[in-house]
Length: 171
Length: 171
DNA sequence: CCAGTGTGATTGACGCGTCAATGTTGATGC
DNA sequence: GCATCAACATTGACGCGTCAATCACACTGG
Image 1 (spheres, chains in turn red, green, brown, blue):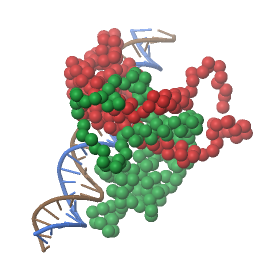
Image 2: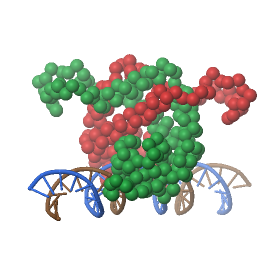
Image 3: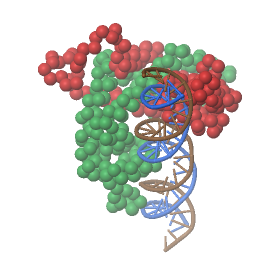
Image 4: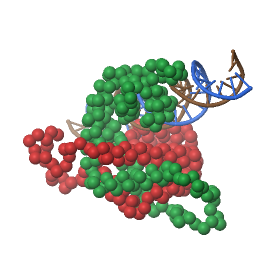
């Protein structure tokens, strides 16, 4: 972790510029606002929260329209307990159903109810339109390209390449 | 709302491409992950949540290190009730203090306690370093430029220019 | 002066997400 | 078979954010 005695890596040793900090804050604020706007629109158009939408999307894309609750959690990258709480609420609203799993009596299988499927399919088109209107329509093709590139770099930085597994120098 | 009979505006009438949708989802996921990582780091380094940090930052930048609670809410762009709840929790933890306002007996003045000021100043440097490490270090100057440009466009799209107020054609 | 209206701030109810248990069942090794 | 351990799923407690009241006080016009 410490770098004493090492020749400085080409990266990192000065502080951030205030321009960089401003970009960071703007990024956070702007994405927060987009989430807020699109979430409100979705709720108004369809009665579904973004979280509901994510769950219903994963279920409706699943083979057989049903998933083990762990698989569902993995698919949408949620903690299992979060999912469990949310499924309780969605079950109360009649959007999904839980049945005991046939092959593993510990597990439970989550599936769409007719109501859930209907609400989801009613929500899709307006939601796509809203994303287009509030996000996609704001950018030129070049800006899209550039944003995709930035996001690739950020992702790459967050999750360093699964390297050839040969180069694990000790720190 | 309907567009029948109108010549199509130059903008918008086709659906989003799947590439655009992917960029949108990646944007949301990546920023969520950055918030998560930096929030966890901040909490571990300093015992403060991002929300705490925002409040303390606004207070420590305020003239006299105290603010009316409405001004504070406006500064950090929070709903007043959210702020009120959060100040309750921060007050219990001894980070801030509330006094009755001298000039308006309805109001309340929020100020930093010594503990709050100390915790905030201890949090700043590691937090800046974490932002640099997880975000700024991932991007080249060109990418910064490009991201700033994208964010400008998005902001501009969300909050259209306060135009000369002459051009309000009916839809 | 005081009725009516508006503003500053708080509260309660409720949905949400996280963390740390908990209960149950499957898998493993003996 | 049985003890042990890991995995599946849920629960409870608690901090958090939103929305719709609510309360106290300031302001305004008559």
